[in-house]
Amino acid sequence: MFIIKLGGSVITDKTKKQTFKQTTTDRLSMEIKKANKEIIIVHGAGSFGHIPAKEYKIDEGYKDLNQIKGFSVTHEMVQTLNSLVLRSLHEHGIPGVSISPHSTVKLDNHEIAKMDFQVFKEYLEKKFVPVTFGDVVLDKKIGFSICSGDLLMDALAGYFKPEKAVFVIDEDGLYTSNPKIDENAEFIESTTLDKLEKLTVQDDKHVDVTGGMAGKIKAIKNILNHGVDVVLVNGNKPGRLYNVLVGEDTVCTILYGR
Ligand code: IP8
Image 1 (spheres, rainbow, N blue to C red):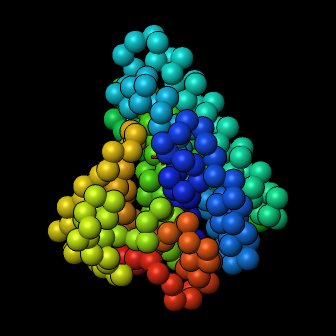
Image 2: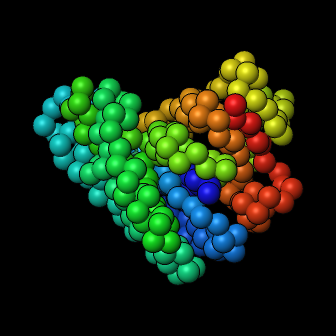
């Protein structure tokens, strides 16, 4: 089994409000279908979720009444993106079913305190493809907060122990520094948790309420600690996700779990 995260910067244009990348998502759906593996899909919120979540400071927890509107607006946005992803999957023969974190996950100070894994299990047993996504969620300590797709990847990888946890991103993989701002950044083909600990990660200026690459690295370290291998692959390059899923050589970064 594979757990795949379709990054928000791959399926949307992160700089423009609610801009869905239909062609890219359709191609990725096609690659997933062709690979014919048991999968769970997680997707990011991109410009549908991060913009309103930032505006209403949802990640800081409940502070004022205006955020109630912000929470529901953000939820509506990510649910809209989820419908677009689901439609793309369905049109390419993938029986995706949506599992919304806001009603199946409970956070405690930004960490997952409770998650309904059983519902994923039952859908998988019936040959559906569970699809979940970065969402706004109730939080025991701070009222509400954001549950990122990376947090969901960590929790799902810990429970299901997939063959690989695959992050589909808008870069070829991991670099020694941020290639968007450092031309001397060196590409890392494969690495381990110990080497990853030594990397410092610099983010670019995307609107990202869940910590961008730094947040992703934290989730990746946890996944490696679950003993699960992680792959980072460029979703903008045709065929690479398919190659990862079927075990063909391709440009990507592989991180070995322990
Ligand atoms: O794009 C963020 O999820 P991510 C979810 O996976 C919201 O970090 C609501 C901004």
